[in-house]
Length: 357
Ligand code: GDP
Image (cartoon, rainbow, N blue to C red):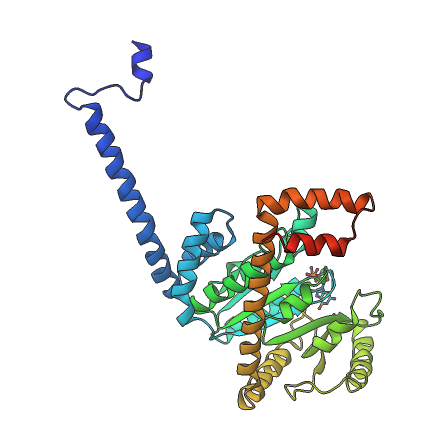
């Protein structure tokens, strides 16, 4: 009797097994239909500024499941005509410079002006350490509670390219959800700053006064990429040093070649913790947008970025497809053995593998 109870196929009185099978087929069809409708419903909700729908769509973008990715692509395609209307700001600086404190204060300032802000992050270290530099601590506690703010931790991934693609797509979704300002935050690991620079309109470098660039881990190219440098923690005993650093930086920046935007990068001081100088930075960004919109650089840069991302995506996909081919997997091992035993060179081996077709 107990055994009978456990059976899933136990026939109910008056219901045959074939009927049950038919019912389950109908259920599957209904589920499939519901899943298809869900994509449309998700897009409709995103356009209505529904944060839960936005989060779900970003989760689909970040998924490794091919069915999810298919859905994600459909959602992005539908959102694309509604994207492109925000200001994208990249923020970088060494750990401890005050990025999350700054974004929290900056976010509060912007939302007080009636704007909506989304904060995304690129943290390639999450794939290396299986933990994330940016995500481990409780960050932006007040901004998280703000209805006009959306904060999403960095996507994880095996490569910076993978994380970057997901972030690019998350930008589109956030824009479709009506966010006016999108912040992409990064820590300077590897090439992450260059990657962020290639997807934003304005690049802000946060610095500390009194510590040399080497100490702050600032790479040379970063200064060149910056549209503004904000010397943070300009408060208390540090204020004087921050002001001196501002003069020095201003002098140094004039030695760099003029930017194609015609924009002269600005140096400013701020205290994220005391909310001082934050309004100046927002004004400065608005000036930049006004100027580059007028000289068309804003538009040209976005076009250039799209071109860059198209080529980047093709290269990435070609690479993945190539290395996933079973013939290549097998032959790569053989060629590596031949290289090890000095029977071929890496260049000849590459030539051979690429020619395998
Ligand atoms: P992140 O690692 O760059 O995100 O830096 P955090 O925002 O976590 O800040 C690191 C530390 O610096 C924290 O203890 C903050 O309270 C402190 N901090 C951030 N901004 C300021 C500031 O403007 N002035 C002062 N005095 N401390 C700050």
